[in-house]
Image 1 (tube, rainbow, N blue to C red):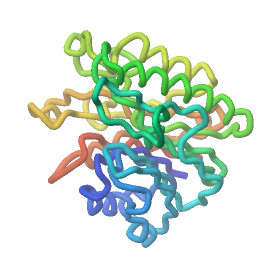
Image 2 (cartoon, rainbow, N blue to C red; image 1 turned 180 degrees about the vertical axis):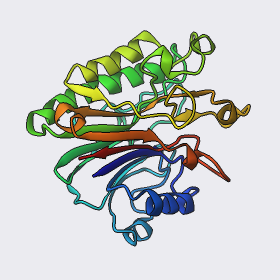
Image 3 (cartoon, helix red, strand yellow; image 1 turned 30 degrees about the vertical axis):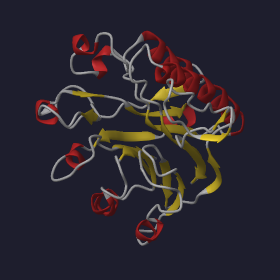
Image 4 (spheres, helix red, strand yellow; image 1 turned 60 degrees about the horizontal axis):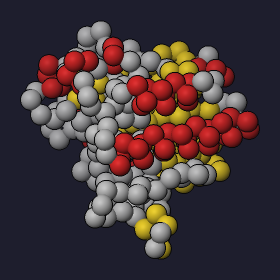
Amino acid sequence: MRVATWNVNSVKARLPRLLEWLDEAKPDIVCLQEIKTTTALFPEDEVAELGYEVAAHGDGRWNGVALLSSVGLDDVSRGFPGEPGYEGEPGELTLIDEPGLRRPETRAVGATCGGIRVWSLYAPNGRTPDSAHYAYKLDWFAALRTALAAELAGHPQLAACGDFNVAPADDDVWDPAAFAGSTHVTPPERQALADLRALGLRDVVPTPMKGPHPFTYWDYRAGAFAKNNGMRIDLVYATEAVASRVTGAYVDREARKGKGPSDHAPVVVDLS
């Protein structure tokens, strides 16, 4: 079985590339992030032609996640219990269902696929450590930990995949000094990842296709990709029952090349 996760940075803008990649890589389960479309407008017909069922969760703004599966798609969960909404900075527009009640953003979708409980996750960016978005990010991770703890009680085979917007260690960024004082590397964010691993989840680290570090994200600016000035923020966290089945894992840098790519590359994990 082949499982993949990819922040596509707009499924509509990247649809031809996505379809080509699905046809070539042939993953059985795909976690997508930043689909940037509504649930209803996700291109289900196009991916169905390649044999995939779809569970999308999007609001048409700038977030959104999806699961594609050719091995079954059952017990779909859009969002997770206790998921917080974003309160926002003063005057900032947020998703509000009614006065005083902020709706969670579309950042998580889970389903059971081929016997594995799989979650596609898109963690908040955090912006700056002194922003309301950073506090929201930490709250979101805390709620995710609680939700996954409950999931693990009934799903020994589980994988939480996606864009976590945190580099687990200094080796996961091209230059730690360049990130001093920035999000993605702060001790509270890294502790949030450690708290997830403490549930019994293993970090499935892929093999890099270039250089010593398996980076998954490169900024569009300043030739970052050509210089390999990247970060490893797209992660696969799996239970021992899943991690013990891993026969190989890699970052597909080829998908980051060419015309109009996402700024992320897919992470591909093969299971026995």
